[in-house]
Image 1 (spheres, protein in one colour):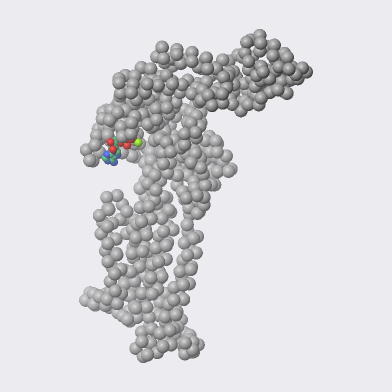
Image 2: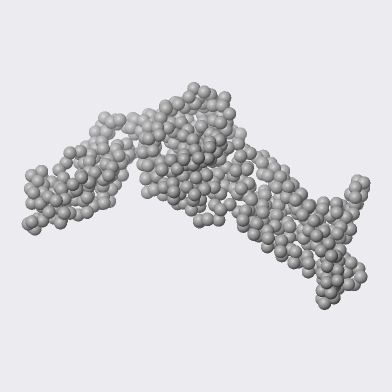
Length: 223
Length: 373
Ligand SMILES: Nc1ncnc2c1ncn2[C@@H]1O[C@H](COP(=O)(O)OP(=O)(O)O)[C@@H](O)[C@H]1O
Ligand SMILES: [Mg+2]
């Protein structure tokens, strides 16, 4: 423990580098995951797409069960055979997008499906187009739930991103792997504790955002 | 004007929900769609604003085939209110009412002004309610906002599917009466769906009675009650049609207009003499400006010498508005035990009285002649 502390004092720039690299990978991955997840989520709520919805959600569910180590390995081989960069940032981001997908996708889908059909019917009856129904009714009502999905997703990715070091991506996984290889307790501790602290801070921030973003009408009164 | 011509709907699963329905609804008329559950009322209504595509026949709005009009455009010019209301919970009352004005691109100030005007119309104080959220309102208030929202851009036509269906009976009667008053002001062409015959008789200028997707009788409430076309109508109207006729009549058509009264400051003896002369044992009391304040019975007037009416008056709340429906007034008489019900106009001014005798006479006449209106 003491050694870990001494290491930080000695090489603070190293820790900072790992933390930033860790955050950067997650940031890129989550942006892509949100765009993909929300779009796909909206798409599969469309009329007559119940079958597609079932299949998509099932696939996303399955993707979650692939052990992360195996997925990283698979991606390495796959990207390599396609002539792309098979180690480092690219496969790491792809894997995180795959994992980050499900909570966002599922929450978007569930939240839009949960919108009171009477509101949609009233909107349509008053002459809203399908697009206006989506943007003026369904999405505003679904936003808090989608945010909750994004929050779950980010916290999940903070942990999984450590394993990305296995395929040569930078981040807080680096000291952990190095520590394991060289039997250096201090490095393992530095990596592990930083990941936990990061997760707690970001989760707290996201909770605030979630509350801010909930429409006022849903927070007041009964029901 | 709305005109249906052999309108037919067959759903994808083969259900024939509406079968060659033809009739017209005149400008400014309130037409009730009435019939047992599943007879096709909602389907027929939703084909008018094209929420449900028509299978056969035509619907004309002011002479124009509604399939020739862009669906969203069509709906923006037809007010729409449903039983579940469907207020947008993430928007304020004001924003809800401004839905169609926003869709039509009205300016912010014009929208706001309209929202306030409409809240006034449904008797909700704009300053108090405009920034509230639907979840902060009672059921009755939500229903009012739903009606206000349907009137957003003052559309000439209004479609209402069991708009008061989810409201408790007491509030429903009140909302119905209020809505009738509003309709007297706005004179819209209205389709009003209900399965409640009482509501139909009270609200409708005309009733379209349906059964299994077919139009059985399209007529005034009085004709439906007193001149049923066949056994189905007779059965649907019920054996108590004379009683239901109470819904058809307004207090003002039955009440006795000129009637003796007592003034607040009058001597009791004078009043008693008047009562004895007229042979009546109860008089309504009015103040100097003719406002109804209570009643005096002859038994209150015995004894005491130099007393005035003011000393012996029984203050009373039981009274009826001149525009009330007869059965509501009658019900009040039964529950309050009054044999004579004071009838008031605006400002609580006494306009006359209602008695059991007068009611009985009028109803008997109606059954005998087959409806007075
Ligand atoms: N989407 C639908 N698909 C198939 N049948 C339907 C559909 N909607 C309504 N129906 C059927 O059409 C008939 C008329 O329904 P509806 O117009 O809702 O009746 P009402 O409003 O008078 O209760 C009923 O038999 C109902 O079951
Ligand atoms: Mg219905």
